[in-house]
Length: 438
Ligand code: URA
Image 1 (tube, rainbow, N blue to C red):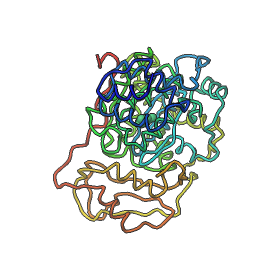
Image 2: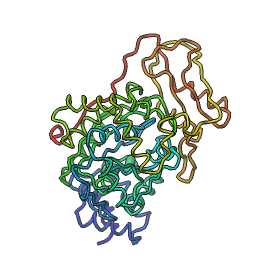
Image 3: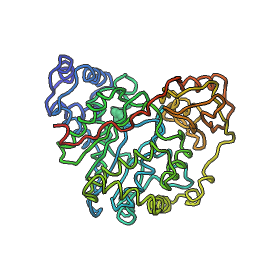
Image 4: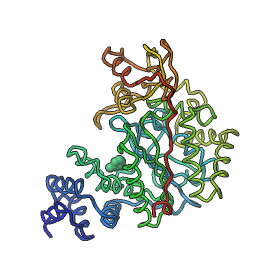
């Protein structure tokens, strides 16, 4: 087999065989196929796409390029959840304790943030002492004992994706549904859970900018799940404005804690309840969506969801005082209020730019090697459809440096106002499963 023939085949829009996809992934991981040839194939995939069978084979080859976690020692159904990433997306921090408090086992392997989107690991690491590296035995034991664990992805999980993603990042080949779907699903399947809920975001702060693309990505990933006989479902949610109010690691942990106490922002709480109810149905802990939602509201009300977070933090050696007293979480030296210079209804809030601005404060990484500052970020006081009077606080900026005039101007530019009343945008557009995508 010659790799150049595989590139040629995809270039003219033909489907690759299982053997050809095997040859591609094996050869790339073992170093016998060079980056420049793989770049050419990736670009051809971006233009020509792949059919469902090719995508399933690609996922399978990537999945078995490294270790596959065996969670069979966990009793009952094990559930996982994945978000395609967004600004202010701290969902796992509230959702995992909520569903665990309802009796679902959550074995979650998370990643770090890059660019304008944050990663769950960076957020939990703003809790002093929190250990994200657990042995597989300790991970399984913790899930069996307390129902949840959030750990870092093992280095031996899907090496093909690590290499491919790094190459895609520098060859403008990230944005392709077959490549994104196989990348996400190979890692999720290798993480070993029985069910997977995908939160596929669309909008300007997300990988997919339109609802149609998000739906196509979600359907592709559900079909991959079907190939592996896994219960994979997806919700499509709006990322045109940040989720919740806080953007930045410790600030998001604090917001997640408030949400577990029933005092979180409305949009973020709604997303957690919606996601949680799908997970309860997947884990067969509720017979209907209504029952699932009632259970989730109950565990917030009676404090057991909050207690689950405390148990997890304790078990992973984090400082639980910071959970009981979030004011003990890392704090920035300055908290600067930014006041509105105009009045009107918020018509648009540019999530992507807000994510970039928070990253520039130190809340995220421009490049992988950057060190994240856990304390800094932005806490919005006004969001889409809110009415703003001149002088109102738009946001508090938590920073360890002074803010430049240019930064402040760019912050102002993230808000667009209208004199007309604006409708509150939808947060969750649809929920998809194997039935609904037929
Ligand atoms: N997240 C992933 O894990 N992979 C992609 O390709 C895009 C987003």
